[in-house]
Picture 1 (cartoon, rainbow, N blue to C red):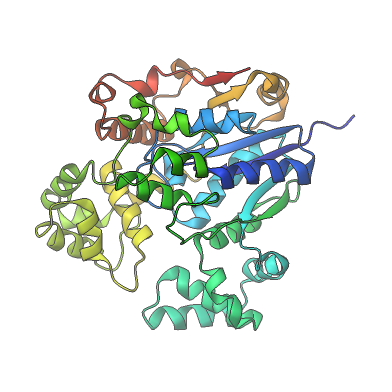
Picture 2: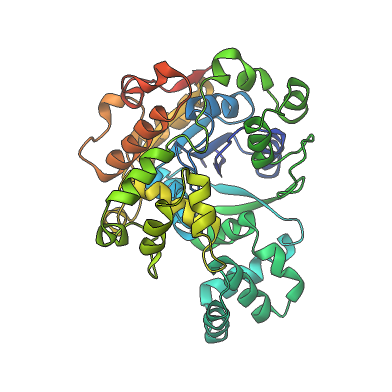
Length: 401
């Protein structure tokens, strides 16, 4: 007798909006999944910023709207380049031993080309490598050069802009990382990723921007979020982490650390440590530091991840010592998913599944980094009492009926 159909989704849900609701429903429809498993970034996202909203709030939103189990993507992978981000998430899905599918959002125009692109990336022929390095030398950023090299090799120049979009890059990396035992399920995105207006299918970035500048009214929240009351309650409005919350801490570390130590930080390259040190003396917050360090060669997202790694003290050596997740932490689940949890905890998984804080391996690199991330998130939270105590070791998983 075959086991259940289990579809994994890699996500951030910062916040959980109508596009995410559509994706979960569509993925379940396409796969006939008995269970939907979300592998969600915790305190720091792939764009290098601390999540605006608490991870347990985002977990509750997901469970209310289609997820059966939410696991945390460790910060070592959630705050990393696309290959490492995708590789870490796929590692968890594969090692759970129960996932039959992995679904991801993708630009509609790319879906017909995904197989050809994935084959190209897996083979990485000399023509692609040569084109990529030639384009890098022109000053293009890594993602832009990567996208243009793919478009050149596929003889599809019109795909260039679509290939360089963040969701497209991640989609391709999922496809490259997936084992044969897990079937990919792309779902066409609805709405425009770079559109900053609020609509029924606004991006998470547009919502965060509107919330940050005070224009995210209750009416707009009701338009774009499936459960606006969760994000607009008096308590929750105070329980957010603003983008510049830890600016002073970041600037202190950059200004006082040596160039040699900064050079060891994950993502630092080509003398960037000197540029960070120079500009940190001339600015007063994180956003201005990023704008000052930014060049055509290095994307804002990469520089933002470097800032997060400075705060985490995440060095290249520490990252290399954690090539894949050591355990999967449960952030929340629905009681109906108990059979799935029993299967994973029984014989299916080749990765430990942990739900109780007291069971976390506190001597592991993964715990060290995730704990640092949670402490930093809490200290940057607007709500004063969230700065107290140790919520990483006291907050239980979200459990819904």
